[in-house]
Image 1: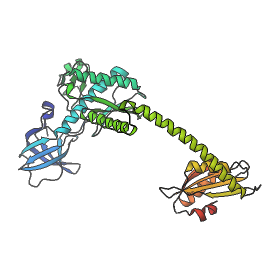
Image 2 (image 1 turned 180 degrees about the horizontal axis):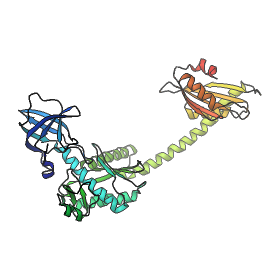
Image 3 (image 1 turned 45 degrees about the vertical axis):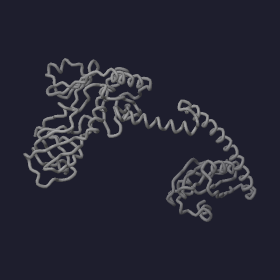
Image 4 (image 1 turned 120 degrees about the vertical axis):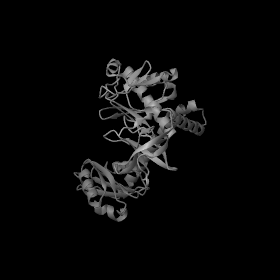
Length: 403
């Protein structure tokens, strides 16, 4: 059934009246098909509209709008409506804020897709306008940050220039003459969105009337995706909210460092340098302490040419500390060191096993077998292995039997 697409003619309108063509369902969910609608059905990377239908004085929520394989637009309802029949009148209101948001995202995507071509020759393979962020996928394996910044600047310059955004339903001959960014799948009945002097793209989505209505556009991330590069961006109020949030973070940091916002990077660099210096000093002190503990422990275990197994339980030590102690113990060639502690948060047993140079013991093979037998995890090389054992392993009585 054909539904007249009011959202093409009046993208800024929010209310309309219609007639029920059919009470239907889609994917097992109740839906209503109308003779005309402002509700945009999901497609072209843009999510469907939400809103409210007023039927016989009752307000019914439209939780989503979808189009089926036959092209029928379904207004998906929160639940079934008893007694509703085809032919009845319906009043409707779309979620204005959602529509306005997606108009900004979608038009911003058109500008950014063209700008990526102009600046980096990065074609848009696909685009997705999500609830929180929008993405553009390109086939390029890498995009330089400088190129992305130039593309972002180009888009925002066009927004500041407030150029016209128009929709066209060209004849096949007119369509063939247009400098399209991408070719349509058909040659007739194609709707083309024009950003004056910049971009022509076949598209059935909703868009603003002028670029100044988009608001700012900000690229917020890039990542490798399916062999190409995915660009994440925000437009309009989303970009403003993102900027406000990051500004608040910087201001809070400035308060913590008792400095100006512009001085935060310097304060962070200073803090990192101080932390590194303290970490290095701690590592030295830890090494010296573990060496003393190792000497005391080894004094109680005279060298044995056939091998000496040394078990040490350290309550609460972390893995770096256990590694330092096992390394100090294993400097004696005949030693196989088993050094353990318990994770303060999970209660799991942390265990490091390391052998001296004169022992043929395979620490990695032993740890793998032992971990499997008790439901733990870990492994390593013949010289040293480490991992975690379940919290139920009793350190004082069980660690030696595990060896």
